Image 1: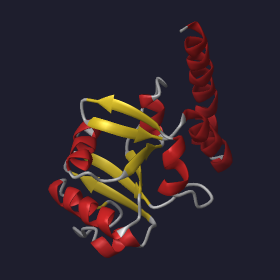
Image 2: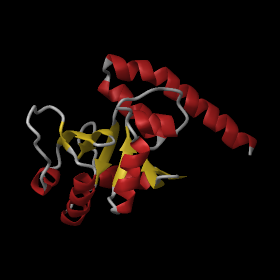
Image 3: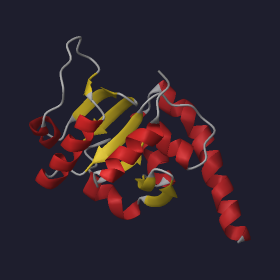
Amino acid sequence: MMPSFQEILRVLNQHEVEFIVVGGVAAVIHGAPTTTFDLDALIRVSETNASKLSAALGELQARYREHSADIKPQKSDLLAGGHMLLMTRAGPLDVLGFIGDGLRYEDLISSSTEFRTRSGRLQVIDLVDLIAEKRRMGRPKDLAMLELLEAVLKQSHKTDSNE
């Protein structure tokens, strides 16, 4: 099955879930020519948002990837604010309560960038924040992405100064 991140994003927006796109899909949205295999969504951990997200996950037929049984995420799982690695009918979705050293939705929403897409309006982690996060994590796959992300950032500064 080919993942349809656009479908996942459409359903999250339809249900008015508060989230920020982070990770590889954020890199792609910012213009990095890269491939990614899952969608990472940093969510606002709140009662209201957990209800909206629960409804969206139900529509997406979400279940935990790492379990052989068909275990579905519960609202209490969403409120725990951890990481949930899910498979949906549209592909893999990682629901994150925090990234890095405890950065939450509230810490990044003011510096995130809004994009208008066919899936609706998306809040996407700022490219500078994404680069800092990749550098901090230091995994081989993150370090490999750094040069590419820094090139995209440099190009975007050139484009901004030419406008």
